Length: 166
Image 1 (spheres, rainbow, N blue to C red):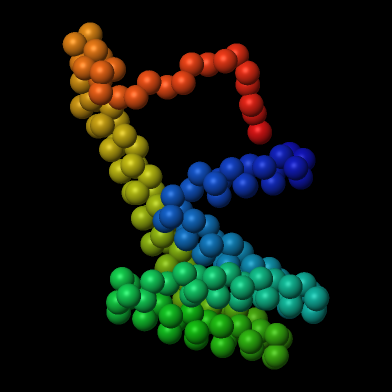
Image 2 (cartoon, one colour):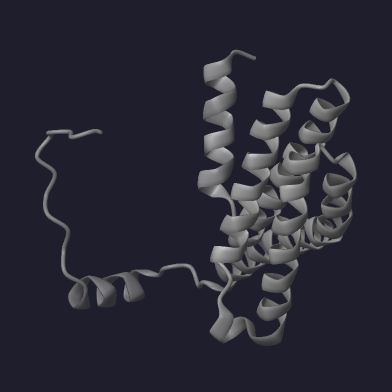
């Protein structure tokens, strides 16, 4: 798969993802970056470690910044503390070239990633089921209901034959 096609596919995944799927994807990317940092430490690749660790820190900061402290209550407060702890530990990855700090954060974030994966699967399934239920429950339009709706709904403008596309 060429690079452009891969980018387009990833962009499509993001554009069509549910909120739960988006959070899962953020955790997945964070864990991937932390594993990259660990591998870079093993290879003594300072720049690779720094790039991967900085990316992981940015992703965790994004997760933290999107917490809704009012609606999230105690759960949001606990997550904020966890994210702060993770950020502090990730400083040790760069300061001390410490793969154990990355491993600790991976261990802390993996259960959250797994929970969001499960939630995203459920929410997507429930969404599909709700759409199917709504489609099945919608009565077929009869001539009588079609005439009634035509009388109450404004008519769409007539097509002119011109086409405007982005």
